[in-house]
Length: 123
Image 1 (cartoon, rainbow, N blue to C red):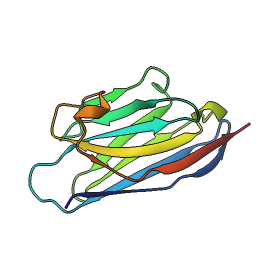
Image 2: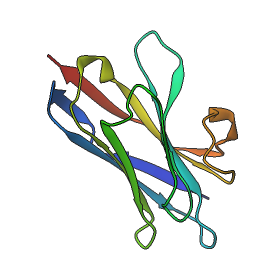
Image 3: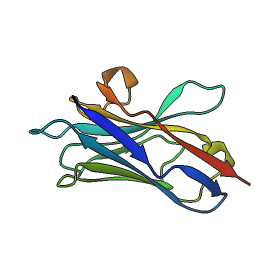
Image 4: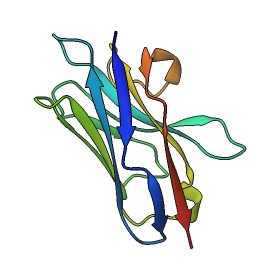
């Protein structure tokens, strides 16, 4: 049974940085493509960033490009999302997800999901 567990959520002041981590367990073999999504209050879930199996291809939503960085440690089976220059509008529950497809932006192509980590941006 694949499990994804996020950590590192909390409050972050505008302009500061926060890093989320996601640990995968329950499967061996070919690594998953990993993604981060978020759901802001009153909004639908949206794609934030994705990374391919080898870690050399990254995709970002336009709203976070240049400020967020996704990375992975294949040996430790973790994926991280570093959020720089935080803004209050980044307040959301951030979800880690795993897919067998090639860095999809569509949440429906992700097979496994974590429970989410709350990030609250303050002015």
